[in-house]
Image (cartoon, rainbow, N blue to C red; front, side):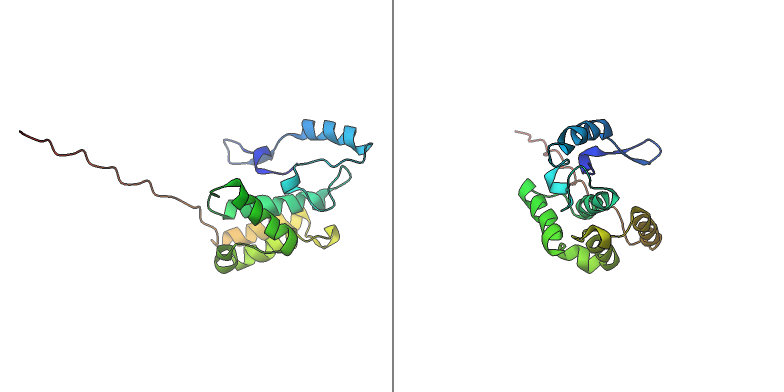
Length: 155
């Protein structure tokens, strides 16, 4: 279940995916019932317990999209951006404009047909290549300047 809530960064800046125990239990239970496993907002179209690595690549595209966007004001804004990539291969204007190679990779990762998506290894290699080009910089919001205290009033 690749989603932001299941991603953890260690003290050594290594990204780890958690929640496998819960996902495996749900997978085992639902597989016989024909149910889907995973968080709907991040699930690949093929979903379900039998979905493999291509489904994780699809979900990773949605997570990376969130990382490339400034904080969403509402959950509806986030859902709209994820659904636009999922359904129409559409990305926010700033991603297309400022990060065209990243945009292309995200579109390939989010293809509806699992066999047309790059492998996780290909995604990793491409992200490393793009990172060396300095294309990504962290979004930093400046803290507002502190308001000076009012001048004392002498009566």
